[in-house]
Image (cartoon, rainbow, N blue to C red; front, side, top):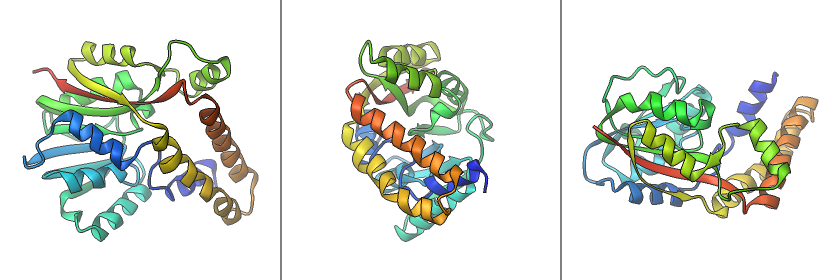
Length: 250
């Protein structure tokens, strides 16, 4: 089994594939001021196994197109939607976030939690703008420095993993430059990293290693994840995800 297949197998067991929580999704909904009774068309891009998709479907009168590159993740989302009785509100689409088959101005809302880094924040908000109706809402969470300076070990790690990591003011500036009016943002709390993402991940380590006979490739994935977890626990005062909410300028 190659490294890519191992990563899919590891992450499909999680409710979330990045930091976040149902409470954070609801907070973003409140900040976006979406009318829960209005008939909305929403694209949830990079939805993973669908944690945010399910909250949106439960809270809104919406038809949601849930997009992820991995069909394995979408199958899990469909199972959960069926179990919760909201499958009729969700359509899944296996596609890349930077090669979407949508029409211009098709959606009232574009939502993306913990996924825009795959194509880069600036590129993503620029590419996705065309799919929003005039006045439509963009909600995207993005890795964000929450201080002006930070320890070298942390800086080096994230500059290597995601060179676009920056402070919130820089992300707001990008939104303004790309034709959005920022509404606001908030920083994910520690619970959205530890309780709903890292701790469940740690609980899967032993089973994952056993399932793959403690192979070198499987062990390397666990080692890398443990390193990232330890970095966050050590330097949590310097970095988080910012959840950015903005309106497309007509």
